[in-house]
Image (cartoon, rainbow, N blue to C red; front, top):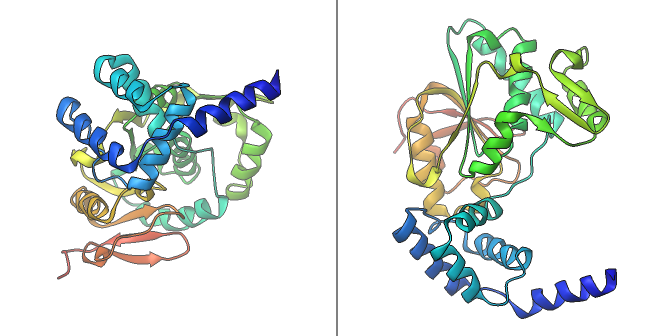
Length: 287
């Protein structure tokens, strides 16, 4: 039976694929009909994502994808979730979080520390930041906003329950905070853990489309990690300007290891920690 299933999946994958031209046309329709704008997302990434959707839902043709998107709003939500799915985990890349830990003391005397995680997925990065702030005595004066395009991942983030190997996660966490008492923040079993209520007290999750440039407030720090890899150069610059306008003077902007800043980004941000991909907002735009 396993061999038959694999042959079937291979057959579907080889028979159905969407071209970049069709992707552009579909993006234009999504923008016009629903106001969902993917037109400046990197075309190769979008095409791979849509072919992934075709395979997952066992569609027999690209026409099937078009018809479902245009007439079925429930499928539209599923489509957006499938297309924007990303990988995240608690204290992912411990060396990165060590660098964040090193820059946080500059906020010790700040009366109001506001942090935005743009593209937060299911929330693990947000809770990682909350734990770090709590252990450094900064959480009580903080407000953390996690945003994503997908309503499904935001719902999971708000619940804060994860099915995963807790021992592996705790190992990463303890690399950053060696004396941490895990029970302070989690109820857990070997393969499942949930965030305790008190850790959620300064956190809010909101749906947000970076393409639209919606202002969520003014922040001291914005993290947008491994999100811009899906954007073309034009959209990257537009989003950078949006982030710049959402940051206080001398605030920090942090990107992922796989993100590439667009040409001309020096207008808005100056690198202060190359290994951590940490930038500082320029007081005024250069040039």
